[in-house]
Image 1 (cartoon, rainbow, N blue to C red):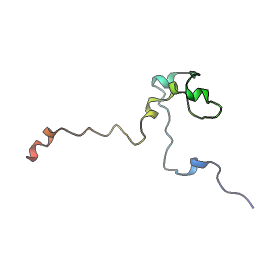
Image 2: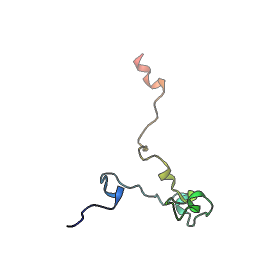
Image 3: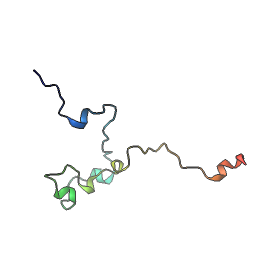
Image 4: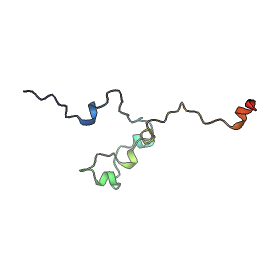
Length: 82
């Protein structure tokens, strides 16, 4: 009787979805110490969030947004329709 249930929770739920990582080059990524005053730092024992001043700028963006999207062209681009 061996238990083969996974105790990882969300880690094995969707193997196709990759975990996003910090860029390492923005100002918050280069910050080495926590501020000690934000809500994440004060709730360090109970929460698992990183310090607000150390949160990567890339991770603040929505995962679905990419740089490949182009803005909607102006009406002048569709001038040839009329």
